[in-house]
Length: 563
Image 1: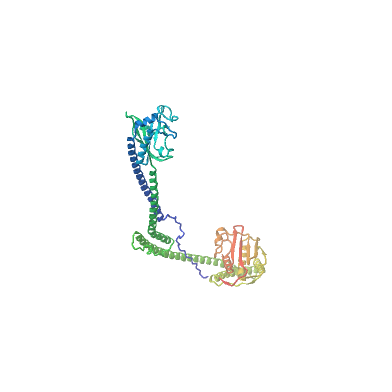
Image 2: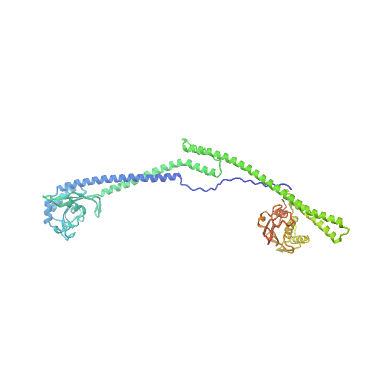
């Protein structure tokens, strides 16, 4: 038999499909970090400037308010004011036409002309039971109550002015002026329906130094909020402009800084996929080399080292695989030779022994043996010769297939008649079994190789006979479907163990439950070769102790092929 080699090469492939966690780019991190830091810094600067400007404005506003209030107090005729309170009358508009009222109002107007932001008004504060007022008391008996006298708003907008002798509950700053005998200011700007204000109150004393009235001053604080609003608007414009310019600048600078990192990352990914044909010199090319260029050079040196080591590993691996393959093939060949020698010696020794025994019996007892005995001796010898002939034909067939000289020479066949002939031959060969042939559809005309098909059917039927109980039924079914002839051989024999099924078509392989039954292990290997020459297929199903079914499919139209 010609030695055959099966070449298979296994090469280690890099994992090109490795999955990496998608990172956040360095550019994005720089931009986000810049946005956060810039926002905090700008917010801090804005808060400081905003607070500083507001404090300066408020300080100036309070200074103006205090100076104006101090000057206004000096011009108030307290005795005249008290006389107006005691016996002045309210007019129809709610104010007073009393000359004393007008004198007080004229002084307020003078102050307003000097400082247009301030609005003056005067009132008395006393227990409600001791107050003179128009209308009902504003507080419970015994509590302090404010009674308004003169209000500058009566000249500009009477709806904003307090009426003459109008009573009202005092606020905390007014009570403090009365009790502490000093100037009191509101701590914060407050808002009412007339606007935004900052107020101060100064005590007015009689000739004995007692607090008999209070002079109130409201200074308009709208412009404080206008200044705040202007600061906010300008800061927002400055923030957007500065942030936009710096963002664009950092965007392009970060792109220039991270481009080399991106290139190196892509190169590393390609190296991880096994592509070492990279020119990292282009990555490190720069007019002004820096640490990134040094990193690219080190990276390139590392890649060269990896490329060299992997080439050596591949060469060593290839040599190792070749040696392992050669050793495996040598081992398989030796095992094949051993099994072949064992099979041939066994299968030839047995028929030769039968022939020798038959001839010796005929030589010694031929003259006295009966005719039936002589025929039995001749039959045994003839059967042994046929077994040896079949063995040699099987070996010759496999040798031709191995050498590529086994040919498929199709010719026109009537498959139904051909199958009946094969069944009859197997039955006449001494089989003590019931072989049943059946067919479906019209399978009369086919274009197949007669010799190869006979080997296929004869081997399958012979195996079914060999491994089935005497007297059992063996079925051969022929079906033609879609230009394919399907031959199905079914027996109810010993079956094939599951562990032996993968190696069933190997040369000289025999099932573990068939060692007590004569056989060469060549039949199914020949069947597989013949089926392959027909470009067909062979399958089987088997259960140990229940039987086996082989199914062969062959195209009904064949062209000449060589193994």
